[in-house]
Length: 481
Image (cartoon, rainbow, N blue to C red; front, side, top):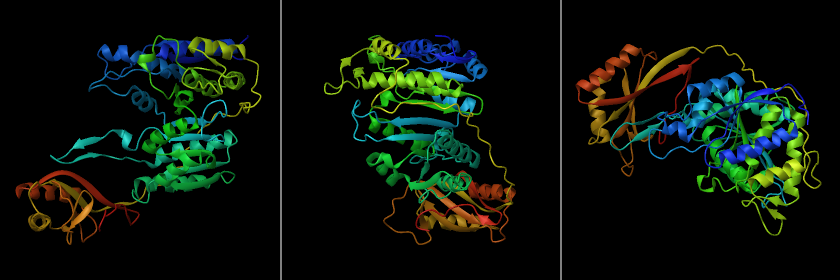
């Protein structure tokens, strides 16, 4: 078939385990469908790790991705043991792939599911949150992981979710957060969601607390359309949504940035299945369909997707979704791809056919905001003190506080002085809050405070400034306060 457009440059990695088999199957379908692709092939994953590169990807491979702007990636194997970085995280952060998009669709009655009407798109923030990976062991008993949420990060992914809904004819966008507890980090995500939603009056917007929202998603997924979430919740719930739709093995995803996009199946490399010609290439093939839409070959995307739907509808299934009551033939990787190729030009008769409209590329522009006036009201100093009681620690701290004053002490976020409860479990990690009666602490005063603490045998391990922005205090007190 004659390609429908000028060949689009893309970077392809065949990956590890079952990766090479499902990539060959996927590319054979794309070629037969007439996709116009100019392919650069790179090597990533296990062999690169074993050659001594802890990121699993070379500078030359990253340059290829930067040059083409489109990366179709098969699953890779990360060697066991410490010291190896996540290749996905490396690529996402290197190229600013801020939105992970996962359509989760049920294909009843041809693929087993309890939710025949499910058609949900999960849009997950992809770069920040707890996945910044900033962790420290601070005492014998306590470690921390920093949850970093930025206004820009929230706005980019939320606005992308609304733009996606607009482009694909979706009618509702739902945000999940836990801002009843994490009032500042998740609270920022919720607040930005409400601000952005005001710009899309034709799209219904709603918010759920993530625990009850997750329960509702698992029980009644047809109540949702597009769901946008911070990184950790999105990672968990996108897999849950894919599985309850029918199979993680059928799910593809896209990772979208301003200049680069990566497309991949969401399952792993399954090395135990490698070389057996049994793996299901559907996840990678559907990721490639998203890629075709992204590069402007929507007609080929529709052609491939409809042929795939017809194959599923005809009961030609790989082992992972084969069911004697609904399947007609159990096939391997190569035969499944051949079956899809045989059905190019056909549409499903019972499942909804797909037509990817030629729409404008989804672009996101962030709103500009004036900087707020910032004032420091005090400081939280975290200290390592394994033996002291709250009263003993307060007695040592109060004399060194001036010109600040000791306001309270907490342990694991629970206030223990003044007026703590005797039942509270205490560790060797204390947060000591100092407030400035003048309302304008200087950095020099904070440094001097820590120096006096050290002179009195108190070990600071971390500080957090307590600020007001435009006169509004910008910190929480914690529990029991």
